[in-house]
Amino acid sequence: MPDDALVEIKDLRVHYRTTQGDVPAVDGVDLTVRRGEILGIAGESGSGKSTLAVALLRLLRAPGYVAGGSIDFHPSGQPSVDLLAMDERRLRSLRWRSLSYLPQGSMNSMNPVMRVGEQFRDVILEHAPERRNQLATMVPRLLRQVGLDEGVVRMYPHELSGGMKQRVLMAMSIALEPDLVVADEPTTALDVTIQRVILQSLGDLRDEFGVTLVVISHDMGVHAQLVDRVAVMYEGKVVEVGDVRQVFKQPRHPYTRSLIESIPRIGEAPWRDEKRSPVA
Amino acid sequence: MTAVATPERASGRGLRAWLGAHPLAGYAIRRFGLYLLELWGAVTVAFFFFRMIPGDPIQTFIQTLQQNYVYNAQASAEVIARYRQEFGLDGNLFSQYLHYMYKVLVQQDLGPSLLNYPTPAQDVIMRAMPWTMGLLGIAAVLAWILGLLAGALAGWRRGKFGADLVTNLSIALSHVPYYFLALILTFVFAYQLNWLPARSAYDARLQPGFSLEFIASLLRYGLLPGLSIVVIGVFSWLLSTRMLMVPVLGEDYLTYAQAKGLRPRRILTRYALRNCYLPQVTAFGISLGFIFNGNVLVEQLFSYPGLGATLVQAIGILDFNTIMGITNLAIFSVLTANLILDLLLPLLDPRVKYWR
Ligand SMILES: Nc1ncnc2c1ncn2[C@@H]1O[C@H](COP(=O)(O)OP(=O)(O)O)[C@@H](O)[C@H]1O
Ligand SMILES: [Mg+2]
Image (cartoon, rainbow over all chains, first blue to last red):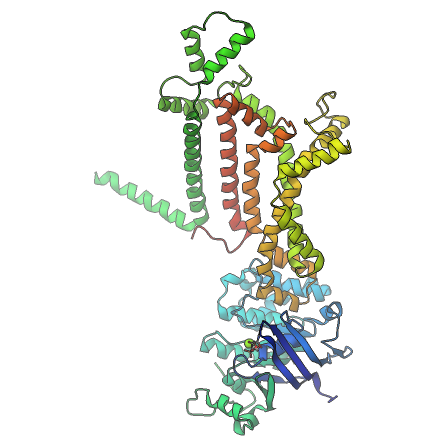
């Protein structure tokens, strides 16, 4: 295993059982996520990005099933495991402390009848009951970190705007300083200015907490702005992986080229030239 | 004119401003007004409906009296008129209605009962009520709690053999009428096995009171009628809860809760059940209201001295005062249960905001 590998996906195959027979949605993917990086996963809608994410998070539901492969996870300070072979009880103790999830904010990911504060409390007390006394300071601090007012603690999900929801989810995803956050379309369905701010905060998360991020987006502009390396998926396969600038400058696969050409660009190249570009 | 109109307008604006600042109070006032209107409407419809049943209860009553006391002579027109007046059956239908509403609303008097003359109808009703409330109330609460829990589990574990077996069994059994089940239970446990009594509410040899013996007898006698209501009730609550549960299980927030690594039991109760039990609370409130109708068939079958059996007897001799009394009680309890639930719902679900 390479020293800096956090996740090693090997020959992963995920199928959906349908009335027309088995549909392979992830079809033999090999991919390594390096510790501390932001890895982008690009590809048009239906290319299998979300299926890869739910398989990695072990959230796959029928009619989907894993047809083969392994996902080796090397959380810091803990023994390495194959996420696909673990039983759910052992997996539960890894969840959120080591492996966390940032869904799209426009989904109903928050329990509609629980206040935001309670939903933080829920997960923190589940995995870190020793922090019970710190809750009152911890949750407002997390919310401030993503640019929210601490009054949000007392609000219900339906009282939040799309951008606010995305930030709450972001704050929640790093509440227990996980090794890996898997973000599926974190900026989709937000308006452009808010997209920028969210991308900025995602970059900050890595810089401040040292979390590793897997960011899934169909939008090549997101990858250009945020990620270190990008993997391009096409029909369930990873057709190209590499340093994001390299991929943008010299796409090897014709599909990647067409994806890049589809981003609207105004004058300059869409990727950032410095490590941290001043956005928004 | 202008001098009068101005302060009026000002106070009107003040009220509107106050209601604007207290939307929940405004909603509660409107909801309460509707409640009063519904009460009046339902009682009025019931009144005219029952008076349309053909027959003259006073004539029948007099004849019974004559038979019992071996009267030879024809009752005088005067006696009949007096009884008519006492039962509120004189004059045309509309003046009878006004008279009835006046007696009920102003004097809180339901009039004398015919079933047990001269006992007032409210006493006849109050005597039957504890039996019905005890039997049906406990049965309804039990059935709801058990059905809700079983339904939640059946939904949660859908696709697993045990859960699907229970679901299919419920689909079949929830269509069995409870009196049919009551008959079977009575046949098996009362007549074949002779374990439990088949009729009445308690052992007639015992003196009603707070003795251990009497309470044990109440439970023994209540078991069969109670069980027949509970069992069928559980099946139908189970099915409806499962039906509400399954779509909630597909919601994003359940996937997210799983990703958070919460305990399955916590996900089941705080995430899944908590998001689907509200319609069941409403349905339960309404079904509680209907308890005051009594359960006619079960009470008849087991000779249980509750409101349902009383209502049937009252209809048999056209005892209007008792019929209306029981009907009013049912109307009042159903509508009040609805009112309380409507006012309570915004507290149970943060998304409910009727008053906007
Ligand atoms: N529940 C499902 N049942 C059947 N097919 C599915 C299901 N979910 C996804 N798929 C199929 O799997 C493929 C990949 O989907 P998905 O992973 O959602 O792609 P992406 O996230 O890249 O848009 C698509 O062809 C889609 O039709
Ligand atoms: Mg997707």
